[in-house]
Image 1: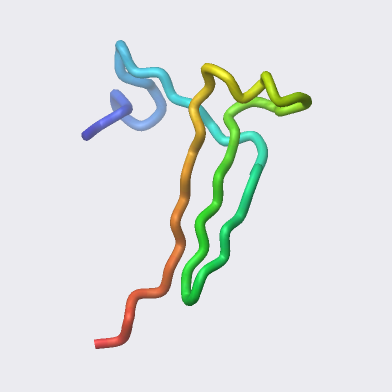
Image 2: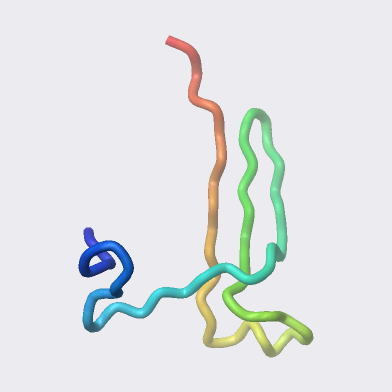
Length: 63
């Protein structure tokens, strides 16, 4: 799925949300998951009606 029109322009009808602060990190065996807010969170209500970005990082097993 393409979100851009060319290199810099965003396609019409697409809204991009960028992570602004890391809210939580959950470490597990050989992986971790990070959760990031798209706006600055100063109080609990700032998380309502806003996207949450989830990033999972892991190392694949050797073959």
